[in-house]
Length: 94
Image 1 (spheres, rainbow, N blue to C red):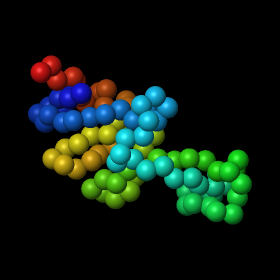
Image 2 (cartoon, rainbow, N blue to C red):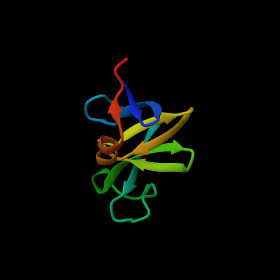
Image 3 (cartoon, rainbow, N blue to C red):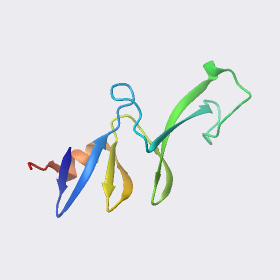
Image 4 (cartoon, one colour):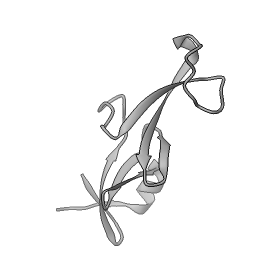
């Protein structure tokens, strides 16, 4: 679906790994829930690990959460939090 952000037209997709699966630009990573760094921890059991989702943007690797929007602007990917997206964008009727 396409959305208007005045004055720029962007392509956007809401991230929902439970409903639509994980889109190709998003990578999932397991990390130890006791570590604040979020690095992969191969020493703990699966029950101790949490999953996080990452996407490569022009600003580097960034965490994306369910409900966030993946926006493509000029071939570059950006992340927009849901509340901010609702405030800034409106659906393009074409």
